[in-house]
Image 1: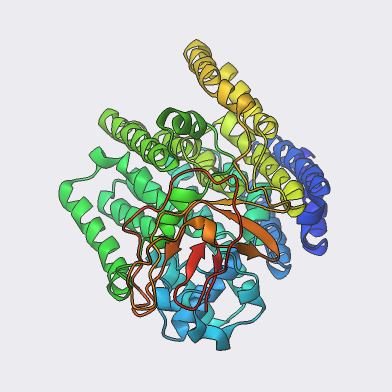
Image 2: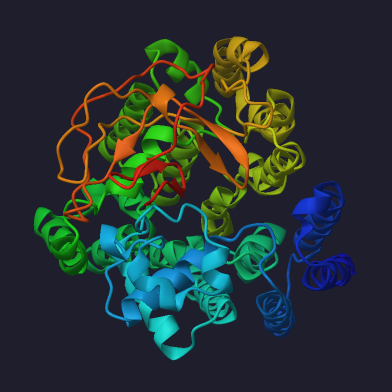
Length: 528
C-alpha cells in the first residue's frame, strides 16, 4: 500500500514537472512539490520491502514512463544540456570543442546558431567535459540533433546503470528492491530526465567498475574507471581509492585507454584543452561548506582549491592504503569532493545514488532531498543580485544531514561533527557576500589573471582594469583583472602576468574594448 501510494504521488509530481514549464521563476512552489515527491519516495522505499520480481518490473516500468514524460518536456532547472548538444553539433561539422577557434562564440559557427546556441552559458568557454562524453555527444547529435535526443540518451544511461547495480545486489545477497533508490529518486528524475545533466553517463561507468571489482575482474574494473574518468572525471578519483585492488599493469592499461581517448582532442587544441577546467577551479564558488575555512586560512581562492584537492587526494590514498570496502570508499571520496570543493550544485548529489543502492547511508540519502534547497539562489539572482546562497539556507541544506550522521555513527562521529561545526561556524554566519562593484545593478565579481595583447600579439602597457566597462544584458560587471586572446593565433591564450589580484569594489567605466583585442570576462567577450 505504501509503495503504491508513493508511486501515485510521484506520478502526480512528474506530471506537474512535465507540464509546468521552467520552474526557476517560481522556485518556492517547485521546492514544495519536490519536498512532497521526496516524502513519497521515502514512503515508497519503506513499503518496498519484500517486493516480488513482478512488482519490481512494474515499478521499473513506471520509472521508465516518468522519465519518458520528463525527457519530452523542456529542460527544467538548467540549460547545461544545450552545451552538450552544441558541442556535439560542432564535432559533427568537423570542429574540436576544446579548440579556441571552435568555442561557441567563434564566428566560424554562426551558421549553426539557433535556440540551442542562444541558451548556452559561457559562450567564450571551450569544452570542459571530458573526451569520452564529447564522443558520446557527437554520436547522439549525428543520429538526431535535438535537446530531446540528448536528454533521452542520458536518461537511458541512468536506466542502464540499474543493470550493474542489480549484479552487485545479487552478488552481495541484497534485496532487489534497493534498485528503487535510484529508479524512483526525485533527484534523478528532476536532474537527469528533467534537466538533462550528464552525471548519468559518468556514474554508469562507476557502477560497472564496482560490479567488475566485486566479480573479481580488476582489469575490467580499471578500464571502466578509466572510461568513467574520461566521461566525468570523478570515477577516476574514486578508483584511486581502490588502488591496492589493482595490479600495476592493469592501472597502466587503464591509463592508456584514457590517454587514447583524449589524444585526438588534445592534439588539435593543446593550448586550450584545460582552459575551461582551470577557469572553473579558479573562479567559481557557490554553496560551499568546508571550502570556506580553507579559503579564509589560505587567503586566496586558488590556493584554497589546491588545498581542498590535496586533502581529497590524501583521503583517497588513505582509503586505498587501508583497503576500505569499495562502496564505502567511493562514498567517502564523493563526500570529500563535495565538502572540500568550491562549487556544489544540486545535481552533484546524483553521484551518491548508485552508491546508496548498495550501501545504506541515511544522512546521504537525506542529502539527495535537501540538495535541492540550493535552488533558492534563483529569486535573488533573477532580481539582479549576486549568485550567492546565504549560509542560513546552507544550514537547512546540510544541517539535517549532519544531525542524522551524528546520531547514526556514534560518539566518534558526534565529536568529529562538533569539531567541524566549531571550524565552519564562524565563517558561515560571519561571512559577507562576495564583493561587487558599486554599479547599482552589478550582478557579479569577475577576477581573471592575464595580460592584454594588441592585434600583433604584443603586450599593451599601461592599461588597468579601470580602463574597461563590461556589461551583460545591460548589467554592468565588476572586473578585478582580465585575460586576452592573441587574435592572430586563435588557440593561443595569453596569461603570463597577473594584472591584479585585489578584490574589485570600485570601478569607473573609462572606455570599452577596441578591435585590437578581446577580453574574456566570465561568459562575455568584448570582440571587435
